[in-house]
Image (tube, rainbow, N blue to C red):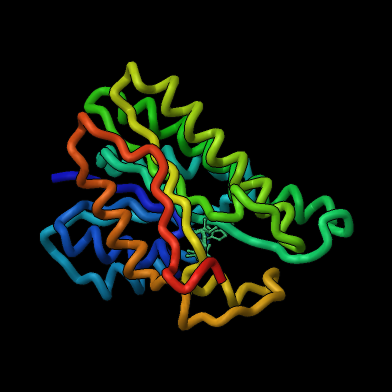
Length: 235
Ligand SMILES: NC(=O)c1ccc[n+]([C@@H]2O[C@H](COP(=O)([O-])OP(=O)(O)OC[C@H]3O[C@@H](n4cnc5c(N)ncnc54)[C@H](OP(=O)(O)O)[C@@H]3O)[C@@H](O)[C@H]2O)c1
């Protein structure tokens, strides 16, 4: 049976993805800050045929990550697919942004992924595997008020390509999933001060379905960068 590790599994895209993989018989390793929400999700999945373990880790705290992953891995499951999905956004003028908010975005959207890959990818090498990093069309555009988010996602796309190149010899594949706007709880975040028509956005289930499709590719093929946009346009 295959195992997937999903970050940001308590809400939004990550939650829908955990359910989609569980329905397809995958074992799950789940991470987010909220252990309560992950426990609720596991109850909802209610599937005795699969194994599910979770760890509450605050990805904004670089000191928690390595220790947290090591503890999660003690359960004995090694993922063949790692989905770095957890992410945050902050809207406001770039140069008025408090330094701590800049560091917070970069830590969660970029540095935590470097840290998680550093712990998990070496374990995946024996059997080979796939890393999917969830990015945004903001990585390729410059949106006023979204500066730090754009920078973090552009850097993540570059990180993914470098990782793919270095790990090719170890049978590790890496893919960036670049998304247009998705109707998720991200739009209710305290740090996002903009609203758009949520009905025209992609649904979290559509993104989950695409992630499952990417995960099920044969080992000798890699979608290196997939862009999924709402047909109505980015916003
Ligand atoms: N929604 C969109 O329009 C859109 C578009 C393009 C790309 N994306 C990307 O898609 C990914 C998922 O976003 P979403 O829309 O599903 O967002 P969401 O609904 O706000 O969910 C974010 C997830 O990340 C987790 N998270 C946030 N801060 C965390 C922290 N400090 N430590 C650990 N986990 C943390 C949250 O769990 P806890 O709060 O429990 O920690 C939650 O499970 C992100 O990378 C986002 O940038 C989203």
